Length: 115
Length: 119
Image (cartoon, rainbow over all chains, first blue to last red; front, side, top):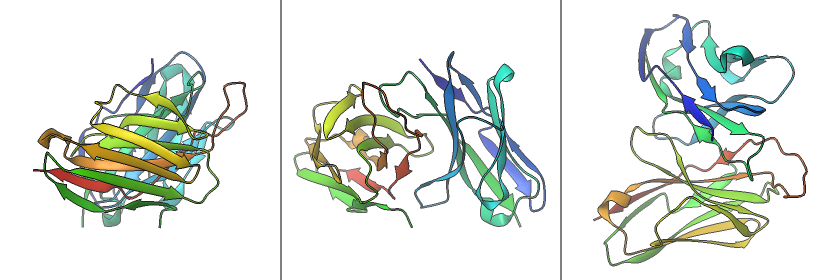
């Protein structure tokens, strides 16, 4: 079975601060990794994804994430956050032996950016 | 804007009511999903349809009944729900897969959700 852990449940930052949200997964095979964002009152949107190749992936709105296989991690980063980044962030994993695209989500990290 | 459309956006129902949630996508995807999301919690998978066949049922109570009339539509029929079933119900779609192989990216596209309140 696969599982995902997000260690930061709540993060409060000031604008222009740097952001790093932790994500660790548990799965022994090949994985696809995702970060989704959910702005207040809105639907889940894909920020970025990793399937293979360059472990440093860039997504929308200046976000990036690095897949470190040896650490089973896929941390999300942004050099300088904005007030509009206030949202809930979910890391998700899909293992290669799934009978389907069963995304397993982490518990989420609620980010608040103070103006 | 999401390309997965869910209706209604809000639904209030009593425990004896029968209602349905609807989901539609026109991205040519062959897999569709229902997730349940409680406040401040991650989405939890309920059902998965692949090529209009129920592929996964995550031990969901029978008061939730999914239906996939065709590859573009997904319904969730609700009957005799409990107040604890109040949640945001998310529909998603993705490329399909075949048990015989084939590849897909695993990326899910989510609708805006239907917020259900059971009184």
